[in-house]
Length: 296
Length: 268
Image (cartoon, rainbow over all chains, first blue to last red; front, side):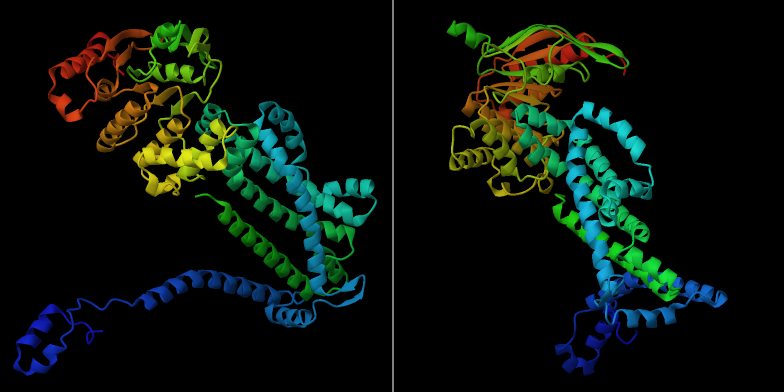
């Protein structure tokens, strides 16, 4: 380090000495101390960003290994990894209805979630607007929401099976009913929080209800709504695994149950990771979507 | 008849305002009587909490009087309307719209039924130019300074070509220099447009500088008009010249006397 640092004094002494006539021409500007380059700073920031999550994952792996050592039935990280590599070599095979690749199972689950969640958004968001906008509707909806929201999602499954007389619509129904609440509530909260100032502007300008919704309510409520959507998709993805365990067919939840019946514990652990990763991706996608729509 | 309409362009008749809240009733205004001539600039001044903003909101139609009547241009005020534009204290611009979109929203509402899009955009541009914000027309409110936001608020109100411009402490949140600058600009704009204006303020200099008459209010509860001061200073008024002007200073001290001697605020 000391070889790099040239203080002002150093330069002065060099300049004064008689042998420096040649070097004086190329005398560099005085450098107080060596500053780390931009690249060094960036890479340091990168490592500071990367290392903690990496350590977290390593810790998880370590605990897992430790438990696997104690319990001989639970496969450790390495056997699970090998099994996963094997499994994902051919994710999209189809042998029979009950024997399909992991890829098909994920796709089937995503389809159900998309349908149930989509329907919930279609119903829940406008409902949230109405509830937030009109005091009467809000009071009317309060007991319904208060009563139905705490119900465990799976309790709705028998009703779905009874009404739709088929497993697939029943699973979608469960997703719908459990995903709708966060969207209704967050949208309604957003609408009720619209500052009075903005509503006064609307009144003074005599804006039509349509303009109020599109120019004031919707832009203001959007961040609240996106929070509701994010929570909803999280719930939907949580619930689908449980619902599919009960309804069967194709899907990641059914697949877990099937592998449990086969006593293929590696696959169950893989499924846990798959569910986690897909959930994380859904969350990330919606967060970035929300950022795009934010006016701030 | 024509004459009366001009003399009493905006009229408040025996206006009482009582708020019914959970904590009980609160009589804010009692027996407010005054009228405003067409083209006149009126300031309402008083200590905070005296209900001066309530008077403005009544004229705006955002509140309804408990008793009494309000008229504007011979018609009873039954609700808010674009002929009475409001400049809010906190500018109340919609943060997701650009400056010109904020103005356009108002323009579209008032003139959209009769005029084409090009015309509406022309009006928007003219209003933005009037307040000297052409360079910031496409910026969002959070990208510009407080003074600029307030100018957009003024532009939005003026673009509606209101009969009465209502200003609710329009410069209260601004620093002294920006405030002085905007006051000068407002004087210029008002001289050009010739529209009637009512401004709520707590700034004595601002009131004397801008107004034709100053309505001085007593302290609440049950606040009423204590006195009305005629500001008979010639226009155009120049801030620096007036600072030395004896009559200006006399008027100024009249307001100060009203506020701090006759109706001094009880120890807060």
